[in-house]
Image (cartoon, rainbow, N blue to C red; front, side, top):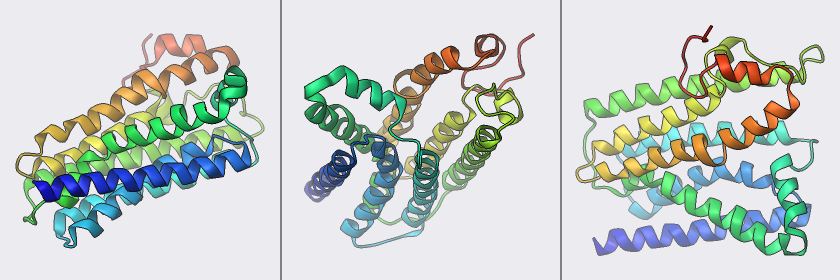
Length: 260
């Protein structure tokens, strides 16, 4: 237990360095949107660091790391491509204006360090898998892998549909209510949460690690009630014609047939 506690402390310290480096890059570029790119990459970094600290790999840790790496790399690349040439995201730009002279230290504390804490909590499932005693795969690993795959495909397709819609001059700035967006106002967020529930099923195969359910719970709560849905809903309702009607007929998160 002492060795496990030491490893968790080392990972927290490494993550502190990771988010600080990204903050310095954002400070130099005056663009806190880099925090969104750092988010996905942070999970890859933490999962890999846990494997190195354990010094031993086994099928479940390799599987969990591969799943988290695929998710994190795809998300980081997607966000970087989306933000290229667009300047700072409207949410961070608004905070910069509100914070005035205190924007430097508040950016560090309220954007980067806070994100690091949240990242650490969400990553607990994969970290604990990678630090666990080696053991064989179970049916829970299969179920978790399949659930993760469904979420990965759901998020990837939803993001692709949104990019195609926003880059088409004929549809840019208009309501997207086709494809997966017909059944959920935030299908990409649904897919992201589903992937972490899949990773947790892998952690559930490790004796005593059921408590890492805080990992998928944390990302689900963040997406639904904190940094995901609430911020976007307010902005989209103000900017996109027909969005309020879309809100009335379409499920916010879980896919469901449109209401009449």
